[in-house]
Image (cartoon, rainbow, N blue to C red; front, side, top):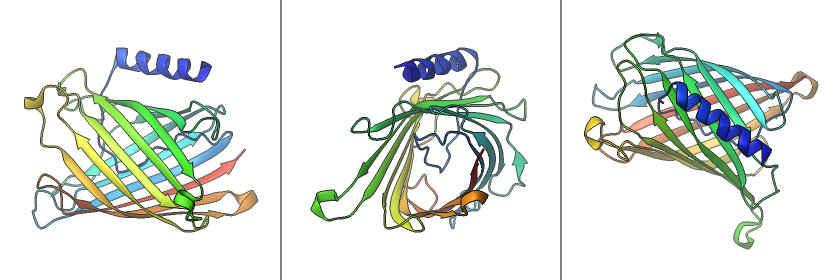
Length: 255
């Protein structure tokens, strides 16, 4: 309960001061790696015959540390290149992952994610995203002898300040993967951005993407470990690009 209370108080404090969010092709896991230093890179690029949706690129670089067993703060630097534009720095982002219970303590492992981004340009609003992250490891699923891992994110966004958008969208991310071994875990994932829950006239059409993903880890023991994710997302409606390539690399080492 102390973890939950701290996470909620933290979110309320941030919302009171600033806010808003962007859509990332990244699953937020509710597990904190205590006393581990992490350097992470996420990237994505779109593929479409329509020039307005083709080659939309996003790159992020993050530094994080498991400060407590239940809290891991991170600093992120995002770079974005919309179709037909050069890559530009988006502003510094402060991310926070909260592990609200130990894995296996409940049927679902609950977590909470909160992010604040200070825009690099005064023409853009500051950003804030927050919401629950949950995970369930299912061993011997349906008596098949297979082990699976399921992760769900439900993140709400809001903007304040100059040039803000008054919409209140929600981003949904789901990943299911088969735990074959630590090096190769195939699965699928879904990303949905539903910009419709408040002030429908201020936002664009919702977007939906689904596709295969592979996840793995290479352990170098005293030299740390390297995690990877690679996936391809298919657009499910006309407002979404036909395809998106996304990847994630993370180096971690305990100190």
